[in-house]
Amino acid sequence: MGKQRNWIVDDETIKDAETPSRFSGAYEVIIKEAVTDLYPGGAEWVKLRISIPSKPNDEGLPKEYNIERQTITSGDAKGNAPTFYMGIFQSPFKLLNVSNKVGKAPALVWDKEEKSFVSEKVDQYVELLEKKVGAVVRMKMEYPQKLIDGYTKEELPRGSYKQYPYAVYIPVYLTDEGSESKLYSRFSVERFYSIAPGTYGKTATEMMEGKPATDIAKNVKYIEGQDITPIPMTDSQMNDYILKQLQKSLKKIGEDYDQNLWEDYGTGSDEDVPF
Image (cartoon, rainbow, N blue to C red; front, side):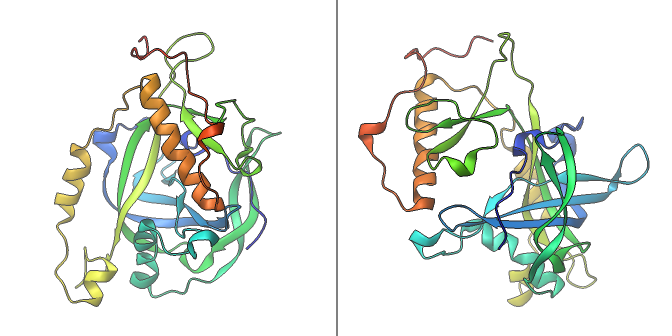
């Protein structure tokens, strides 16, 4: 696979006016991008971009949505075993009967100097591109993020995730002026399903095993019933969160957690964020 690119942080990719309760649902989607690359520890990630024909923009064209990046293999230290999301990601290959061939294809990449998206040829699962498939898409709201050293809590340069093995993204609740940060929308695919006559609604596993299709409406109702409004964490909750994220990062590079390097986050106050 090619050299790692410096993608825009997921929580800034889409600033859509939709609300989660109006957006999350089952759609026929077209896969516009299926970018793949490796973390330093060998774990593979994928990042999809989809369009939804039933949601046109002001020009009448299908709106496009960046799906948050997901890790699909565990990395060299763990034998590159498939992750939970691999089970979801490999489904459209089977549903569409296409191979997992990787090749160069254009994708929108964030240019830090131009501060805009530019088209660049990167590694992608090329046989998925422009294919239509069913997908249960979830929208959730999140605070913007910043990058810190998981051990020291020192803020790191934006876009430098690859250069810092202990890097962790954390939510930013307040702006530099002290007001509440604006929430951003993020998107994930909970499942892919067939849209072909006779197998409509079935996942790849259900098709192969001859099982009836899972009730899509029930799946969507479950997503809509989940809490999609983020609640700011206290300092102690933030420490727990950072520790979990740091340990995940360490696993990807095959290192053990070192308690001697740890410094607590924040001021030591356990009060709620003041807004």
